[in-house]
Length: 418
Image (cartoon, rainbow, N blue to C red; front, top):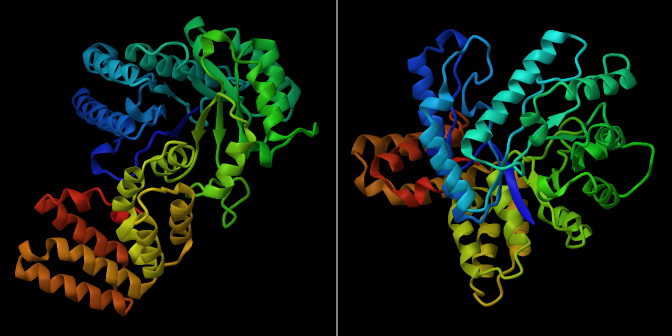
């Protein structure tokens, strides 16, 4: 099983992707942003390699305005060498990549212009994967679209429009159930009419289930039959709901015990599992370590080095419990470790604990900091204690100083990102 995440990497400034507005999309600006985005993608892929992440969804924004009809820039020619380099890096690391067009890429619209734009957008996604040199197991995931007041006609129209697509797109396309209109039975019917593989989305299924009452495992088993030999391993989407938000909203992070219950229900099935969660790669690493039967203590120690100041800012007690756990080098326990992290993530901001954590971080940079910034830091803490300053501004201040002093240990800390 490969476990991965979608599009955005958390924990580094070097991996941010940039966009551009059409009004500013000169060739010079496009070159600048595409270059920066591909450099960011290179860093993301390197992170994935180092953390044994074998599944990754590439953002549709990697080439800004890539399918816009007014943009005539031939990025696939100018960046062919750089894209081939990235593609070889991905292939050599045995990473399976995919893409997922947004909500406005709708094949089954009654409006022909909307369909044409959708087809153009799919062609852009296909071209990007082609230039990378990715094979047909690297898919483009698509929702069915809208019901337009007649669900049966909307399904029929999707099937008709699908048959009008270029064969290059057809070879990469897969469809998934959504959380409001097209449930897993609807999508399986479309698969019967088109031959398209089906991605089972766990959270969407929870919020939009069909009348036929089967377990998630059973639906996954049915969907597996839609994946052919050239499609690669079956792929599913997994996420958990955030009970504090609207029904169907994705959680900020993967809750470890709930995840392991789902994982164990798969009964060692050989599938690829894409996490759709707000903390992206952080939950991917968590789930990979949770499911690693040969886990080494150094993997948890590396994670702890990144989480420790965030945890200290939430709870000294949890901080000390994790340190005590990691003293046992012979019995690494990922579930226990991440249960502590999960508990810390669920806590509200504690002013006293946050001041303590900020002071610990300050200890790494204070000696080389100018006197005016020393005074400023202590003033900021006083203002935070009185409710006149936010914690975010203190973290931003500490991050800038750590960056100036090139303290990599701090720059890699999740303290600045969570």
